[in-house]
Amino acid sequence: MQNLALFIGTIAITTALWLSSMLPTVSSKTVRTVIDNERGLYYVFPHDKDWKKVGAYIGLPHYEDIFSAMNPEAIKGIHGRFQHFHPQDEKDYVYFPYAELKKYELDELAQRRPPLWITATYQGKKRPVIFEWQSKEKAQAVNIGDQRYIDFFIKNYVRDRLQKGSYQNLWVGLDNCAFIYNLYGVFDDKNNYNNKIKWDRPFPQNDKEFIQAVEYFFKRLKETSPDIKIICNEGSIYDESLYKEIFAHTDGVLLEDFLGEVYNSDSALTRLRTYRSYQRMQNFSANKLQIYQPNTRNKDELIHNMYLAYLIFGGKNRFYSGDDGHSLEIDPKRYAKIKNLLGDSITPAQDKQEFGKSEGYRLYWRFFEGGVAYFNLTGKTQAINLNQGKKYFDEYSNSIKQVSIKDKEAKYILFSSENRTAKPIFYPIRAITVAGSVSVEIGTMTPNASIRYTLDGSDPNQNSLLYTKPIKLTKSTVVKAKAFGSNLQESFVSTTFYSITDKQPSVEFHLSSNSSSEFLKADYPLVSLSHISAKPITVNYSVIGGTATSNEDYKLLSGSLIFLPGEKYKYFSIDIRDDKKFEKDESIEVSLSQPKNAYLGYKKVYRYTIQDNDKHSFSKSKLLTSKRE
Image (cartoon, rainbow, N blue to C red; front, side, top):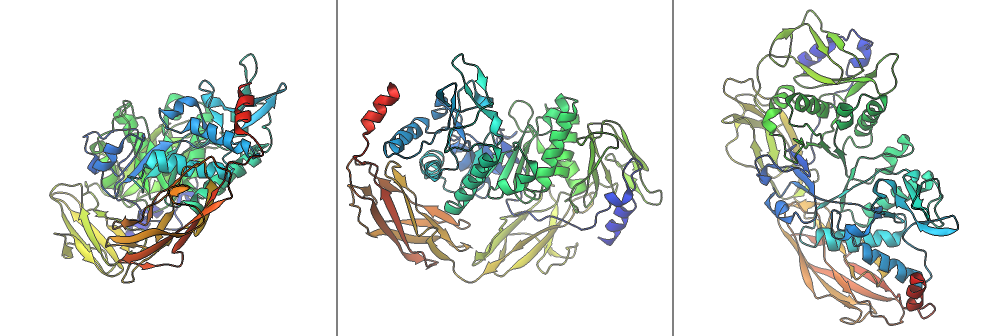
C-alpha cells in the first residue's frame, strides 16, 4: 500500500486541474454489505439465461419463476409505484389496486374523513391532479403523506399484491421518483393540461409541503415495516440540497438509462444532469444499493466508457445492468478484464469543473488498487501528463507517459503491465451479527485459479491456507483471500468481516400495537429477530384475547413462523371482516410462544384495533349517488 501511495502521488494533470485537488487524502477501500456479485439486472435478462449467477434483479410482479431460480442471497425486487396511479395499473406494469383505493376513499368520505386522491379546484370545478409524465393515462396523485394511504400501500398493495406472502423478503422498486410540485396539473374542460395550479386542502400547497409528504411516507414505511426494502428510480426534486434528507429512509437507487442522455445529446443540460447524478451517488446514496442500467447498444466503445463511469460513480453496494438495447444483459466477459486490472476503489471519486464552462462540464476520476480511471465530460480533449520517473501502462499494456482522453470518453491507466487474476468473492456476505456460525465459500471467476486465505487479518500470500472447501467460522473473523491464476499476476486482496455471537437472538413483534379501518381486509403483524441466526428459528402465534369476535370480525388460526438462516423478518396475516354493522372499534390480541433457537423478547403480545367504518351519521349509498350525479 505504501508503494501504491507513492504511485498515486506522482500523477499530475497538466490541464486546469491542480495536483493538490487530485491527490487522495483518505483511503476508502470499500467492503460490500450485500451479495458479492455485481451483476444486477433491471428489466434485463441474463445473457446466458442462468439466473443463479445474477446478484440482483428488479422486475415485474409476475416474475416469481425468476426469483425461485435465483441465489437465495440475491436481491429480488418487484417494480411498482407509490405516488400516482391510473386505471390501467390494475392489470399492467405496477399492478396497483386502483379501484380498491377509489372504494376506500368513498368509504372514508362516508365517515366524514378527508379524501385520499388529490384534487385541485380550477375554473370553478374540483378536478383530479394528474402526473405530467403520465397525463395521457390520467395518472392521478394520491396523498402519500396520509397515514391511511400508507397503511393501504403496505397491506393492500405490497403485502397482498406484490409479495403475495410467498416471497416475504422482497425489495420494492418505486418508479417516477421525481418530486416537483409543478409536474402535476389538471385538465380543463377543453382537455388542455395546466400545471400552474394549487392543490385543494388538506393536500400539499407547494414544493416544500410536497417534499415533506414524501419524506414522511418513507419515514413511516421504515418505522412500521422495515422489512420492505425500497429502491427508488433516480428522479429530481426542486431543491437538490434536500436529497439526502428526503431519501434517508430508502434503501437504494436505480439509475435507468445511465449516461443515455450524454450519448444522445451534446447540451449543457445533459452534462449538468449527469453531474447531479454523480453528486447524489457520492452523497446521499454512497452506502445504499445502486443499480446502474446503461443502454450500451451492444457497442464495444460504449460498454467500455459506461463501465468505467460506473466504477467511478458507484458506491460499495453497486450493481451493473449493462443492456444491449434489447433487454439482454451484456456478457460480463466483455468488461471483466477492466474490473480485474483495476480492483477496488481506494478513494472516493473526484471531479473538477472545466475552466470557463458551466457546472456540468467536468473531468471525473477515481483511484483504484491497480490504477486510475477517468471519464471526460469537459467538452474537449484532456491531456494528462504522468511523472517521468515512474512507469505507467495503458489498457493494452503499453508503457505510457501521457494519456489523452476525448470528450465523452473514459480511459484508465495501470500501475502494472501484467494481466491479473480475478479477485475472490465471498458467499454469503453478512452485514449484521449472526448467532452460531457461518459457513463461508470463496470463489473466483478465473478458471483453475487457486485461492489462498487468512483468518488473522493479514494479507494472504502463496504460503497461506489453501481454500478447498467451505470455511466454518464460529467467532467474529476478518477473512482475506487472494487468487493465483496460471500465467497471470495474483489478484488483489478481497476482504470481508463476519460478526458472530454465541447468544441466541430474541424474537418479538416489531410493533406492540396498530390500528386501521376494517375496510383494509387484512393486517400483517411483523415479527423480527434481534439478529440473524445460522439455525432455523420457529415461533408460534395465537389469539389470546381482545373484544373482536373470531370468524365474525376477523379470522386467524394459530400457526407458526419459520425464519430461515439469514432471515430477520417474517409476518403472518389476520383476515379482517368488513361486516357492514355499526359497532364500536374492536381489538384482537395475539401472542408469540414456544420459540425454538431463540428466546421471546419484550414485545411478545400484539394488539390490533379494528376501526369501525359503519357509522349511521352519513349514508354511503347517498355518497355514491351524489358522486354519480
